[in-house]
Each structure stands twice: as C-alpha cells, then as structure tokens.
Image (cartoon, rainbow, N blue to C red; front, side, top):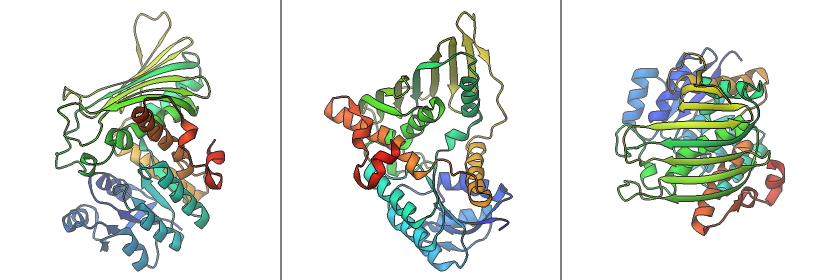
Length: 350
C-alpha cells in the first residue's frame, strides 16, 4: 500500500485543518468527505479536491469499496455508531479529542475497537508541538534537574458565537474541562511521564459567561512519581488578550513555556534571567496536526507502535471527570475511582 485512503468526517474548523494536512501528506489521500452540511462539503470540494461526499461517516464506509482509515474531526457525539461502522469494515480510526463525554462511554468505545482488532488513535495534537518535544528533551537531559512541581495557567476569552468556532460547547456540560483542559491534562501526563493519582478541583462560571456550564477550572493534581501540578484555566477571561504559562520547578532551576505554541525558556537556580530555547519552525494548527498524522501513518504503514491510543486516553479523560466530581462534591477525588472496573479496563490502565 503506497498511500492510506482516508475518509474525512467533519468539515468544520478542525476538519479543514485535517484536510489541509491530508492534501500535503505524501502518504495519504482523501477518498471521501462526510458532513451533513452541504455548504461545508462544497467549500471542502472547492479547496481540497472533488471527492464523493456523504452525510455521515457510516454512509461513507458502507458505500466505498476501499478505505484504509477514518478520521473523525466532528463533535464527540454519536461516536458509537461511527466506530461501529469502522469496526465492521476493520477500518482504523483517528478521532479528535475527547473520545467521548464520559469515561464510561469512552471505555465502551475502546473495548469495541480492541474487540474488533482495529487501531484507535486520539488526536492529542499538542503532544506533537515542537515546544512539547523540546521540553521533554530538557527534562530528560537534566538541564535544570528533576521536575518536582508545576503551575499551568491558561487564560482566554473564547467568543462562542464567532462564526469560525464550533457551537456545541455553548450548551455542553463542563465545556472548558472536556474541550480545552483535556489537552493540558494530557500534556502533563505526557511530559512529566507520570500518572495522576489525586485531584482537588473547583469549577465555576463567571457572571458574564455566554456558556451554559462552567468555563473556569482550578485544580491541584498529585502524580504517582511525586509531581504536584497546580492548574488554572478559563474560557471566559475578563480580558480578551490571551495569557499562557506552563512553569515547571525542578531541583536545579525552572522551565517556562509562555505561549501555547512556543516561547520556551529555562533558568538555573542562580541565573539572573531566563534563557530562550530555539524551537523548530511552526505553522499553527498544521505542524502539530501533521505530526499526529505522521504517527498514525507510521503505525499503519510501517508497523510502528500506536501512539495516543484510545486506552491511554482514558487516563486523561479520568482527570477531567475527577475534576468535575471533585467540584460537584467538594472533596478530593482519587483518579482511579472514576475509571470503569469492568472487563479489566481499570487494572489495565493502572
């Protein structure tokens, strides 16, 4: 097989990123679109090539004779039908995060894919940012010693009524947690190489929020290797200017990422100023998505280990769900307590 024949389902903002990456890829080709919106389909055909179009991923998979992969860039609703169709055809799936809007539902989808023997990868594209990979290298090489505690701050005024943004977060439960914080929690697991064990969290919604559910999250995580991380994120900042800092304090200094796509610095304990770290060129939303697609294609075409698997994703989702439980019940929550205990999911994850 020289190229993966891909069905792209979902042609909204994120779907257009995927279409751009797919048409640039030397190892993939789009063979069909799936989206119920005729305008979105027409736009994609004009920009990314004329291909058959279907109202759903299920219709596309049932109609096409040859499909090698399905990319789900649509909202995390109705995924069971989509994955079931992929399982029936033995088609590997790369799905945008979150896999589902509850850990139990996600675990069901993971077991479905595993039973069918198909790869299920989750689109945690921030793992493939140059700044993420360089942070991991600095920690691995001990440039500032061993990481012991961190502070992750994300402040944004997300205008949910903007025409270029998906609208479903306006009415979903805990939109900040499920749509944004999931990225940040996953990054902490990935970069620190530790699994979370405990969280104390509070979520709330400011008076001016346009969202029906909570857009502010404050959480304190403890990890199994001793790492402690303080997280604060908002989609309804009182200031439209975005702010980001991920600072990690280590035995001999600090690492500080000051933009979600770059601006990495370090300082040793007695340094008078931060030292900037050179990062590779980056095209926002494209470079890291291309890295994600490359990992997927290498797994399917070259036999490389599957990264960002659905099963691995369950632990990041458990961090999200544990935060919601902690806030609702005003108590600390063991992360393991929200993982399903049936069919070995709980034991296998831990």
